[in-house]
Image 1: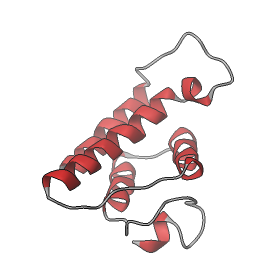
Image 2: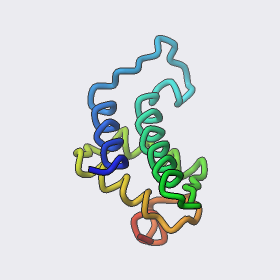
Image 3: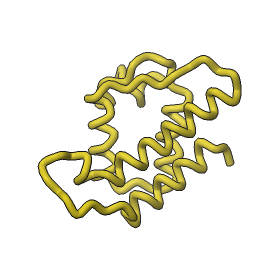
Image 4: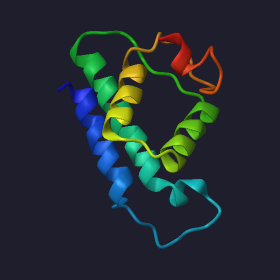
Length: 112
């Protein structure tokens, strides 16, 4: 299993058990959805590390809007391990343009 897929499995367990908790919950979405942010960053960090180790010059560029949409999906979709591995693979093999909207056909899921 690739490191990117392993990071997706780790993200799955973070989302399932929600081990990170903040006592201070205010209107800041970062504290409300901290486990989702950590799960996304685990995947993105491992993708960046895989790019670096393979000598690939690529980088994932996600706008604030695209990032919020990923958080929403991780929070509200009932994703399996395989589903998260597929999302991680899509991010890894993405064509390198900026991810802003993952709802349209010209989005993350329509360009790979």
